[in-house]
Length: 219
Image 1 (cartoon, rainbow, N blue to C red):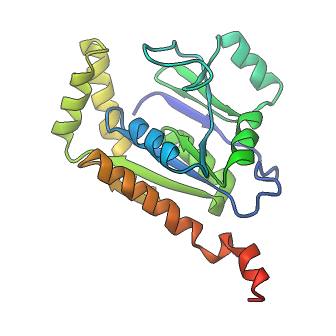
Image 2 (spheres, rainbow, N blue to C red):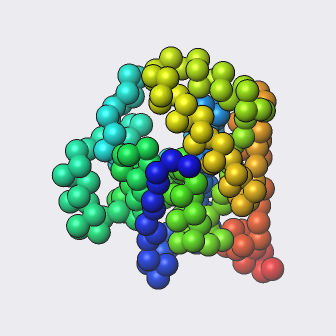
């Protein structure tokens, strides 16, 4: 698997505050599986789902916007965030550091009842351990390894060595799919988007997330 380490937030310091019915949806999957496209579409279709704009030390890619896709910062600034305990969670993936700040999490909660995070398997484990039942995990799988390889090769944005490394890492990451709450196979993008939306509807319908409404009915 890719070189990756993750640190969890203290369990005694819940970032949800007074948002008793909110939850986090953590989505993982190998590079090239389409998880970024799925996440963006779910957010566009449901105003009650908001992403966390995470912070990273990797270089910005063509088509990305600072403050929209990620907060792109130098290592020195990431070190400052760590020193000031401003990060809820952080990880090293493919040699670069990623982290979610407390401010970014609170901002997402102020706008929606579902906080969506797109992270690697190590980051998912950290969030799950920290949030418990408030963290729902979902893994996106490709229809086959051959098709995943074709999708990665079709990007034409990386050299042969990098492509081989990502293919190798993808195989290792998919071994963790069975530990997630949900698994969705991306046979066709629109159907995969609908499947993720169905998971959100189901999770919102849990009695534990409808407590205020149930109490209003005297139940």
